Length: 257
Image (cartoon, rainbow, N blue to C red):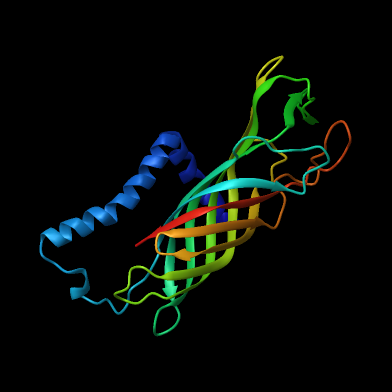
């Protein structure tokens, strides 16, 4: 598994170089517009969608998700502020395991970016990382850390779909494995801005439980981390308290094809 993550790291690096967030959102928009465009062109050609029944159909193989990211197990006096967002896209191979094809196993590959706005200032002095709570009298406009991951979602899938039914109920649950290929922290305030990248204390492997449920295009999505974002050596400089915060993400997920 680690070999796969390391191999994909180089692919993600190239993708990160050529894609910024606006381009990522554009890709998501194109993915969700394509089915509508194809459907319209099919109708223009006089072909009915129900005229051909695919007995080997698969469902929900591309996904895009937007989440609100919360932090669990926060040290004393640590709080979040603003909107901590997550953006996730990927492909899941749908593999039905029964004759009706409404129960399946899904294994996929995706990309994810997650930001966490909070009041722990990460700085570096003499090659030593410091984690300090920002005093209430300090003026700042931004303080966040961000992770960029390659992810492998594994799902057990149940739905009410048929070969000709395109709107259906679904409940998908499983586990998501992630490899952090890049991370960064940004502080914008007084007395000076601080930017760091590839912080050693961030756990390279992130994993957690997932649940997606809904009807048709509207589906709720939850992610509950099973390990901490930072390693066990990460402590607040002033109190010595371990920073073993975990991620909890709640949002919407959209499936196509």
